[in-house]
Image 1 (cartoon, rainbow, N blue to C red):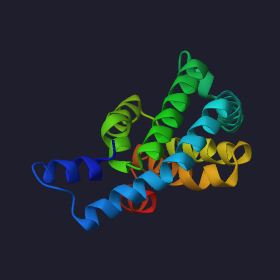
Image 2: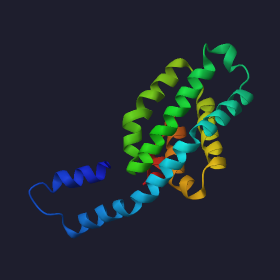
Image 3: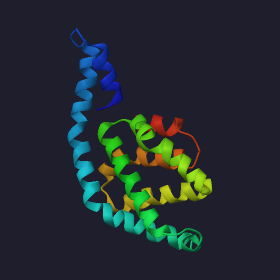
Length: 167
């Protein structure tokens, strides 16, 4: 559930929702069908998006396989995980969920491995570009802010603008 809704329900314990809270809940509910349809589309096109993203990354960075053991497998795993968590955050309409459940710890790992910030940003911008080629405009409009958030947080370029865009 969306964190704002969780906080609203917690604050409303023992009382009825006020008109403003009811409005927030209705707005979330109105968008759920579109977000579910988008998640279904992302799921159905995931393998093509990931395959093309990985191919493009290895084309742009041909030494990657020489530098890192199991680079291709790791790239597929990481790109898939990021796409799935971004889709879940989009469904929940909750950028903080994405930070808390994936990006904070993953950014630490990527930094620890020694990946350059520009490489990380390129990688996740490539994921967004390939997703944009495969997904409908409506789905990309919902997903893009979360993919932007991934590129910014994982590369260490901050979260403020991405989180604001996702809200």
